[in-house]
Structure formats: structure tokens, C-alpha cells
Image 1 (cartoon, one colour):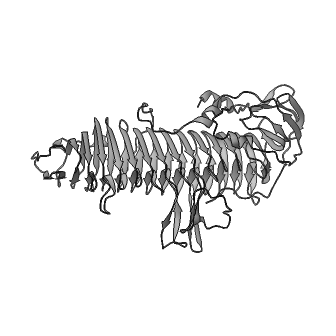
Image 2 (cartoon, rainbow, N blue to C red):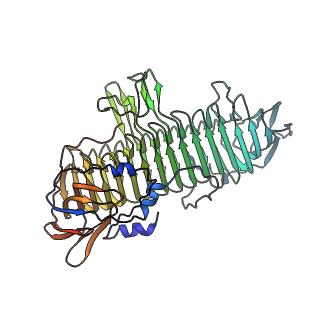
Image 3 (cartoon, rainbow, N blue to C red):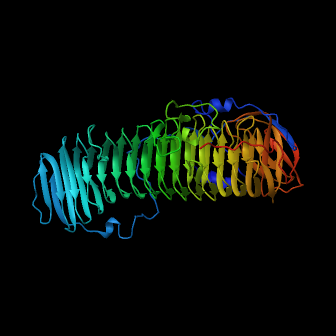
Length: 613
């Protein structure tokens, strides 16, 4: 992302720069966008000149999400966070060393520590002994390490390679803090046969802190890769790779904190999450890549109204709140119903870099039949029967008999965010409650709605470019408040809109540079404090559109690689525009005189609420 571009966009001139290439995954959608014959009360423009494209859309349409174990960890100024005061590794000293060679284990005879050895299976217990540091080396193809104790301890993996074909490779049964320090190159693998108590290749019953300067590869063949029953904390300096073919990659039973590190996680099981947490996930630094390739699936639960529910795979999935404050996050879901990020309660993004790709279609199942690319009408289906692919989904709808409970608050105040979705019914970013943007840059290519909120949406800052190839660009099922920032909304043809508000709600414009184009604009205007230009016409991909008065250009933009033919609805609003004043609207070599008003015309009202549960 070129920061200079967005500095320019936040001035009186707002510019939309794009790229178009032969391998653009959305080129077919763009080429098939047809005209809509809604008329507007403003001027009509037609430009077929087009032009070459460049700039930020080159990255938007071509960025990739792939495992990256070698690129240097990005710097972050965000302070590391821990579950409780005193949990930081720097607060502890572990000087009682217990050396264990997994290739040829022997009892090192350390006071206060009991070692039991059965072949290459080692059990260590330090009871109430303080300051114990287990230094583990060596390789075994049929061994395991189990640790128990009533005090905090350090586990230093120093070029260790542990495979247990029958169960967990490292089993930390202590309920106290376990500080896993990585030195050199390490590897942990479980097996295909195990009992039901086997939770992961690396399991911790207490809080698990992962740090150091080395690397660790974890392979979960029977269940999760890493399973922490309590908190999982990852600090800077490490290189962690986790792969599970059976379930989640990294699973935390309590809050997870990613303070740094190079983290790559990939999972392939249906419904699996690369990173999964029963409560909250916080990312403060590092570079995290989370890839899920599994499809959606039906999960039987006889306590639910329909005897179960659909669940989908995700890059990150948490039952609580998602926080992004710094670092880099790359998330990808390729299967049906897959999500890049899913948080069931709330989401807060204050900084960092996020890149999300989803590729799957709508998943449908009623427990008997299923479809991984469902194209039927979902309006009257129970929410439990479908799972829509989404780049980011914040909030959740729970149905239990006649009772429905909805959660969802999404606030974005900073960060560099790009989302691309291309599967059937795939939305870009959705909040099941309110959606507030006060800063940051958000660029979205989506097959379905690019941005959607079930409740009110408020935009008071930042830069938003929302492109929807088959639905509305920005869709609020509550009121929409546009107070500031730069907003560029490109909706699809027909009944789809650049900006869509539920017909019972209203749009309020009190600030911001706004450009909207699509088949129509839906909703009722509540009030505005700045002029609005209503126009219609056709625009070529990469053409430049500007609004000027007799002395200067007030605002301008360059079209993305999307061509609109016919009388498409165009809405432009800016603090530079005054209701009742006349301006020149220019597109390429075509120009027309327009008068700003305090109304919006062109396909108003009657919008179908966007977004599906």
C-alpha cells in the first residue's frame, strides 16, 4: 500500500487508482456488469475513452496469501500483552536445569525433580520445586514427553524432534504456566492412532507461553496441532509452523495473544480453523499466516432446534472478540462457507496489516443433504442450514426455538485492510450488529456485498473502496451515517446499489468525500449538510471523472477496471459542494453541467436487506 496515495485521497481531491491484468480473478464479473435503466434527476455523462490503470488496485486484485517462513518479522511498536500481570517471561527466572535427551533418555538426578523413563517416553514431575528449566534435545520416532508440577516452569526445546505414533508428543499436564522456549530447529508430531483424550500433538493444561529465538514445526495428524486448554501466548523472535489434517491448527481454551513471531498455520479438515479460540484473539505484532482449505460441514447437536448446525472452516475463528492492533495477518479460506476471520461477539481493528482471500461458495446442509456451492433461494431457510463465505464476519445469530439472539460490534479505527472474495454469496466484511469506521484504509473486492451491517453503519474517517461484483457495495440494514473520510462504492447491475440502506431506515450525510455508482442507490435520505450531485450515464474502466467550478477542480476520481453502460446511477458528495450551486461534471472528453442538491434520486427505496446469516 502506498501511503502517499491515501494522503492524497484524504484531501479535497479523492482519487481511485486501479490495475487491470489478464489474470484478474474478477475480470469476468467486471466484463459481465450490464446497464440498469434507472434515471436520475441530474446530468448525464458518457465516456468510452477509458485508459490504462495503475496504483493500489494492482495489489488489490493480485495480492496472494501463502505460507512464508523466511521473510523477516515486521517491526511493531505495540507493547506485548499477557493474560495477567506477572505473566511476562521477563518476570521469571528458571535456573534449575534438567537435561533430557529424547534419543537416549536417562535420569539426570536433579533434586526436587522425578524422571520416569519407558523406552523413549519420558515423564517429568517437579512437584513444588521452583525455577525448573527442562532442556530437551535429541530425536525419537517413538517417544513422548509428559511434564507435571505445581509451579511455573520453562521447557526449552533445543534441536528436539519428537514423534509419538500413538498419542500426544508433548503433554504438559501441569496447570501452572509453561514457558516454551525455542532454541535451534525443533519438530513435534503425533500419530494416527490415539485415545479420545488426545487433544493435540503439543498439549498444555495451563497457560502456554511460546518464545525464544528458534523454530518449531508441529504436525497434528490425529487432532489439533497445538492445544492449550487455557491461554496461548506467542512472543516475537520465533518461527512457528503448525499443520493439522484432522482439526484446528492452534487451539486455545482462553484468550490468545500474538505479540510477535513468524507464524504459519494451515489446516485441511472440514470445519477446521487454522487458529481457533474459545474466547478472544489479540494480535499485537509479528506476521501470522492462517490458511484453511476444508469445506463446510454439518455438526450434529440434538439440543438445537434443527438437530445441528452448519459450521465452516476459517483462517481465524474465535467465540469472543477479535482485536488487531499491530503486526501483519494473512488469512485465506478456500472451501465452501469459509471465512478469513470469524469472531462471534465483536471486532476492534486499530492498526496493522490485514490481507484476506476467500474462494469457496455458499455451503448448505440440513443434516441429510448438502451442497458446497448452493445457488437456491435462502430467504426462508433456517439460519442453521447455510454458511456463507465471508472475508471477515463479526457477530453471530443464535436461534433456539422461538428465541433469537444477535451479537455484533465492529469498529475499525486504523490499519491497512484488503479483502477479496469470489465464491457464490461471498461478502467482504460483515457485522451482524453495528459497523463503525473512523480510520484506516479498507479496500474490498467482493462477489456479494463488499460491506454489510445488520444494524447501523457509521463512517467518519479513513479511506474505503468497496467493489461488489454481484450485489451492493456498501449495505446497511440499519441507518447509515456518513460523517467523514473517503468513500468509493461500486455496486453491481440491476437492482444492486453502490450504497444501500434498508427501506425503513435513513442515510445521513454530514461529511466525507463520497462516490457511488451502480444500478441504483437504495434508501431514504435523512439529512445532509453538504451538496449532492445526482447523475446518470456510462463510464469506462479506468476513466477519470471530476467535478469543478469556474476556478478549480473540487474532487476527482479514476474508475476501477469496471465499465458501466447505460444510465447507471452516480452519486457524488463532498464538503466542497453546496446545494443549489452549479458545477461541471466531466468524464473523459464528455462534460455536462450539474446542480448540487440536498436530495438523492435514482432507484430510491425498496432494497432487499443484504447479507445472509
